[in-house]
Image (tube, rainbow, N blue to C red; front, side):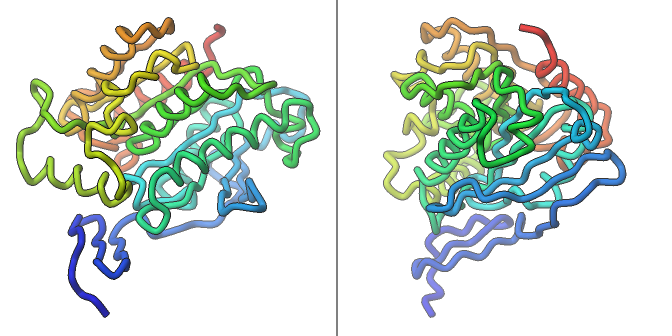
Length: 315
């Protein structure tokens, strides 16, 4: 067994030259359930028989007995493309709460993880999931919850960290490849995992921190040109103006390493020729993914309220 390290990304993961991966976080899973606290029901479904893509679906219990059509949220989890999953207790608990508060149906996509499945696997799987959702537009798709209760004229995408990166790249792809029968009303990017080779003003210049982010990206995308790859640095992407969702909400946290990238994304998206509306919500005194680690905090509650309002505003 080769014990030589390729990337030491402790305390998150280690990747060895022989291809072995040790994950120290994000490996715990919980089954789908009827959540007693929120009344939200969940189940796991296979998205595509010819691929490894699956998803965890969530629906408010009250909806299953009614004719009401609910907004649909496609959610992409974070974890640097390497750790975490849709079955993680962190994401399961968060989506139970979000679905209950917003009264929506959610599809939490379990895309394949790097480095075993390097980029673009996560993007391809996420696109497969969007196509699967669109296949329900005539009410005869494979999933009854979406056929009976999903409003496919009111679909949202959301994700945190690497999941927010996926939202950006799916929005651009929607501008290049149309999905018929489905209308995207908004994109939510929480603490987006964007980066660049050169630090932005106010961004950390600490070599260890910058090196960790670079290693995560290189481990996930071995053929990348680096952190100015358009997939990682939207400012270098000439296709950004084709982002085909006209409302974007970016959530940033004041002491998060990625804070400046969130604000910068707003700037470059606004100047790209894109014609939509983008807003940023900043949580004072908070770090990356604070709403997952401390969901009962005031700032987490405020952020939850903002997401709920964003998805329920008439537009």
